[in-house]
Image (tube, rainbow, N blue to C red; front, side, top):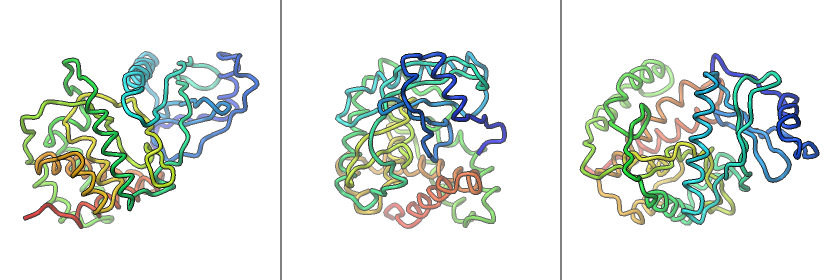
Length: 299
């Protein structure tokens, strides 16, 4: 998926686990088939998941990210009734793998890419409950300070221009440019930053019988635009469940439209970037954009 992507083999994982966590030597290890773009994932027995970053970076920077990810996971634990991964350990580089890696608890359920909850109003209510629970985590004076989604919309103009140019043969770019021209002008408003999961896409959401069963990839938990987690409304839900989520959250027009803007910004990057290397992610981007186009804001 990435030009400099690392390769992580089952033999490498077995060697690393046996050397660094000998108490798990008797546990089977198997690769988890995933559309994820950040980590290669392996199960260790029935209780644990090993996650190996796919893109190279300095060892200290990689370890710092894994430590922050574990801290975020601990901060989220127990704040909602929905299971999330619990940090277990951080492994060291070794064998043929050059970076630190992490171990978390396994959260059961089917990812929403495989069991689509888009028509489920009950799932929409669950998702709204999760978002509300995350928003209730104290920021402790923290504010958004990153380069990614969650701050100012116009800061993403350069990336969006790249996406528009790369999507000329894939999407109705003139229409999408007009949409972005409106969305990027949405004011931030007076609402202070609140805690967000930060990446409520189908691959990070677990489903069981049409209900929310758990949420993965919690390392991005942090303060940001309160509208950021509303991307889940567009990535995960069809029109009526989406409206049910909005009613439960009590979003005003500005917050709702900024959520649409963040979903639009994320989806534009998925369609072209993953067109050949991760078709599931590319299709997700197309579906999100189609939902945004088909359900415009009221005049």
